Amino acid sequence: MRSLIFPSIIAVSIAAPLAFADTDVDLDSNKDKWSGSAELGFVSTSGNSDTNNINGRLGLTQESIQWRTDYSLSSLYSSSDSDTTAEKYAGSLQSNYKFDTEQFWFVRGAYEKDRFSGYRSKSSVSTGYGNRFWQAKDGSYLEASTGVGYRDFAIDKDAAADGESDRGTFVRIAGTFEKHFTANSLFRQELTSEISTSGGNTVNESVSALQANIVDNLAMKLAYRVKYTSDVPSDTDTTDTETTASVLYSF
Image (cartoon, rainbow, N blue to C red):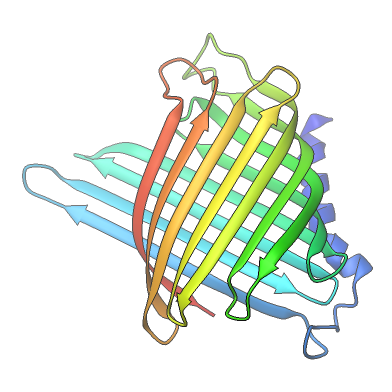
């Protein structure tokens, strides 16, 4: 039964904008407005040490008068002297029903598979209220949301035979600040906290990113991510960090 929960809710969040909003309506025309970005970073060294690092991300936003839906896919791979040292794949989808230009109700689904986390997979669904407190004409904004959800962190028995899976309800608090310094550069800060209400983990995450255009829709992006999990399987760390440099194409 549990295996049907997450696909069902994610399917609902995809279908909701189509069911409750006129797909032929847009902010400025009779069609939904789509925007997005794709980024790729790669570092390879050879000699005394052979290393390869690849990171990629695809983000899409679909917006109409009543709905805004964000889709995200990302991956990270790293190896050293033919040994894999990092391998992670993640995806999320969030649909916001807009009450007005500031307030919204969200439905969110997320999935992550990290080979070295001690978990076989991590999935969650959540829903709640959000507010875009401030938005400037140049696109800068400050947004926060809070809600409740259910997650399934399935432990990898091969990696941590003495651990326990984390399944239960949680409270989600999230905030995003984006500041456009010029028409060609911006800073973005994301903070999230998922606090278990059923005796499980507290997961805190911070993502800081600086982006500057090179030419037209092509930009360089530097990002730093910190993720803290309060209780992790044996032989794994509570804190993960990532520093990435990538080329980003916006469309």
